[in-house]
Amino acid sequence: MATLTAERTGADTAVRPAKRRSLDRGQVRAGWLLLAPALLHSAIFIVIPTIAAIVLSFTDYSFGDTWSWVGLANYGRLFGDEDFLASLWHTVVYSIVVVPISMALALIIAIGLNQKIRGLAIFRTAFYIPTVTATVAVATIWMWIFNPGSGLANGVLSLFGLAPAQWLAGPDSALPSLMIIGIWQGLGAKMIIYLAALQGVSSDLMEAANLDGAGRWQRFRNVTWPSLAPVQFFVLVTSIVGTFQVFDLVYVTTQGGPGTATRVLVFDIYTRAFQSLQLGMAAAETVMMMILIGAFIMIGRLSQRDN
Image (cartoon, rainbow, N blue to C red; front, side, top):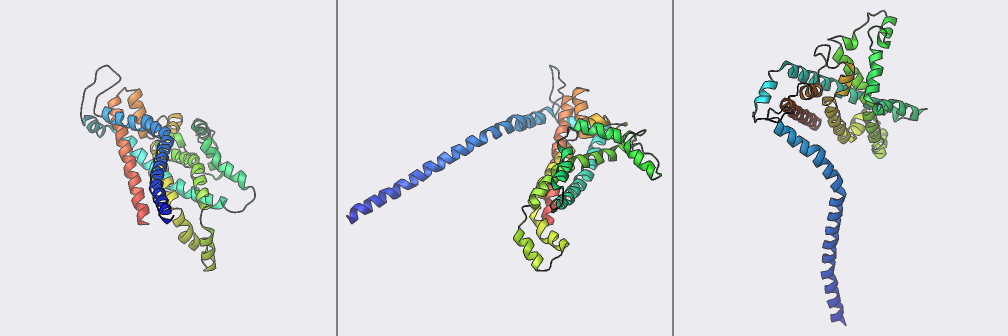
């Protein structure tokens, strides 16, 4: 009897790993099946276009039947092109200003809306509405606000006895005006992300810090801020990508003007590809923008690691 029991136990032990391996293979197949739509989407709309842009950047293709391989000539021509250098500078400045200011304001607003106050849902909705509003509508409203003759902004300035500004019509004020619009429009999305992260901060840690006599600033610095680190990086990356890809706002409000005062990279790529029909140059500029976005993200990652 003991021998029979031992034989059965040994047989069960041998069968269990086989079942386990079969189950693992089934889970792997199910996982790949669930990932398939996302992988297919990424391949069609991200990987293939990226490879195509890189290949086209080494050619002089211009929507014609003939094209030739020019190597790095397009990149050399870009750095001698005044429109590209202006758009590169404006995009970098726009990103450097808009990203940190919008992130800081969104965090402050999220902290305020994480308190128990009356009309909390109304305030959250009000701050989030610009995010889901079409950029064309947002740009149209701000064009009226910044109208030099009858706009709301100059009306407010006149109440304080200040001279009217040109806003979007002035070469020195057009880009800062676009920065104001970009910061305002992007607050809602960042605020929602920060708000969700703040509600996930450990209440036990906050209570322990409070019992230790930590003030508000100390609790924020030692408990809240470290807990927000992963979210901070996510918001930073999405903000950098968003600011480098700004186009519709510029297209509706200024068309890159006055002059080239608000010409940004994506607008320059658009005009170079679909107006000048220089697709090879536009592809080279796209590759340069991707490299620049990657560099900014790496700098942001390193700065967070130092902190």
